[in-house]
Length: 153
Image 1 (tube, rainbow, N blue to C red):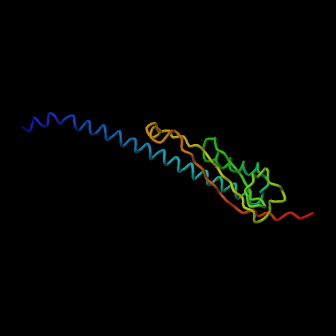
Image 2 (cartoon, rainbow, N blue to C red):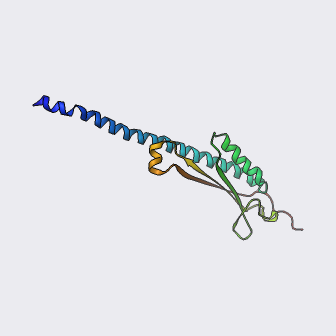
């Protein structure tokens, strides 16, 4: 009786191992991609904060602010495809694009906001089938302009 059961159960262990191994590999690939996404988001936040640090002293130098953010991201070995939006609080309280805000509205106490967005590509094929091939990432860094108010003429 004992030999009869063991003959039928020999393949069962192999099937269980193959099914559980596939599931474990899918979970592992998800952990790897999740770790990459978290690293990317932290790098984006660090780059945005670097732009804010520069922008608080030189708020009207929009190109240089964006270059600081891009340079910080390139040092982290991240691919391009990021959108950088730099805005400054106007006199009416709304946020205006850095390149469009009037020079006389940019002075100490005004808020500076840098938003970096990226579409993160999932590399593991099994995970991409479940959650989609891209994950939208977005970070925002805020600061206060330190430049004194220009004299009224």
